[in-house]
Length: 479
Image (cartoon, rainbow, N blue to C red; front, side, top):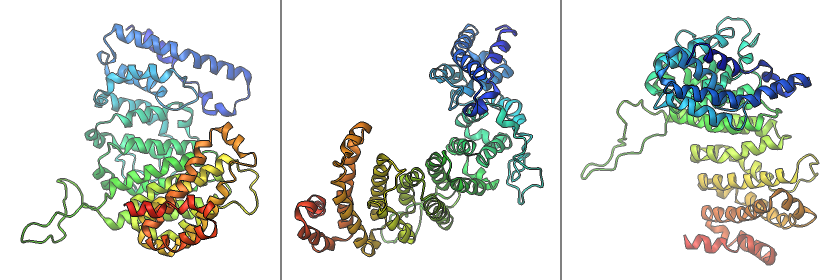
């Protein structure tokens, strides 16, 4: 490959800076120029792929050229306004030889040193030692970390960083930790929701391969947890629902990594009863149940209940996102969630009831999706906190009974046509099935309600409520 051809192709693939404010552009000439460039990306990637084929692939090139190509092409492996539908499919065949099985350390180091580090050096993270990647005991006395932000004008850096994170060998993290962590934390702690969302996604790319001991030894485990918890404060933003849906599973992954569940006890041996012995893998650090419960409590109690549910009550999409994520958290925390039943049960049952005053800005499909999501979370809550359900059985029966009665009206009053238009008819069916399932789960947790409360419902209106609780008795008996 001639030295003139490669620079020309890489220059043609350089993403115009105007894409950083693409959604705010109104100049027709600039928009036309960007669209023309975007449409030409596929041709340039195809040309680059063909040229690499004539030189036996990217791995036959010098390290510096491999890094230059990877940094340019990886910008098209991920989200972005500059990416066409075929860009990723054309970019991956160029990059794949470098990731079999992992990015060569020399290539990786050059990308991080010559491409990513200069973009972020103007805005050092105040809580990191940039030479070691360790957490500083106190925030550094630096200028405003948000001033300038040159890295936001380097379009595609998030995709390049994500590609690196997904393809780093675990043993390589030690040597490049000080290069990889600052840009990740810069994204995660940014004040703008789109960049913060990208930061959460980058942490999700980081966690599968990073050694847990490295996170704990450098103090980054707590730093990541604090920053991820801060994402729930970005309310009343169009990206809030996406942030919630990304932050919850990423936070749970981090918790599982730095404070894994307590291992199961060994079975007793003949003649010698088990004395609380546990299976501990060689080379692993001991689990700390208190730390794990504290982190899970912060996620459930402070982030979801104390922030989203409390302050985003007027944003149905944010409430829906938080409710969608509840089952994941409840399964992780288990019976410990009983501490928040006073907040969870009213929150989940209230969503099932028709509003006293209609909410004109909330579409029917959003309301129905929230009801379905609330029932899924309620079923999980009943299962994980079954020993405490006897305190809440009346609240749940009252809400499900009212919801079942109002569910019959969804098919009428013009709602059927709306459901058909939006493809929500299957959601209506799932809603009714989940109402029945909730009654079954509650009967499993509190068997006495089958002969008492459920019979009272049937006696009140057997034609209406037999479809709701009539099968609960047989379902629990069969089990």
